[in-house]
Length: 192
Image (cartoon, rainbow, N blue to C red; front, side, top):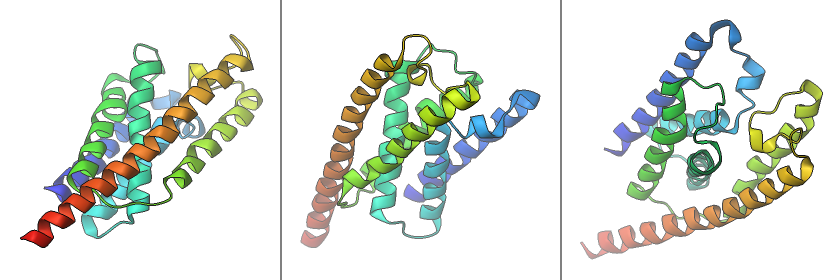
């Protein structure tokens, strides 16, 4: 069951990415495409899922994938639902809704104990720095809430601080839930 779920995650992300390339055609811009947190987190989660089909993957790596996908789903629901981010409907639904849900479900079904969840925050921090440096250079931002042109850097900073607080809390929750559920599974197995 878990391996099938992991394979489904991989195949869904692969299908959404291929769909995007085909549908966008000449409008597909490789560097811009891989400048979306959604794309990076989905590709990372798909790779982790595929590796998990063939063998064990570090709990720390799995936990990071869960955090990034949960963040993708939450940010989409709160900040991006209804906003045109130039993503065709199928890919938008798969990458923002379906895969985030499946990755979280997979974590709940096969939980693991993790430590140092705060280290998972290094990728989103690096992503933010990259985006805010690259944006003014190429005059393009992947998300409206990271674009300072309409309302200035104050609004961007406020949004980033809010997302950082949510990310920090979510990292703690992912780690705590994984650890608690893994301990419960161990206790049940040891009593059998």
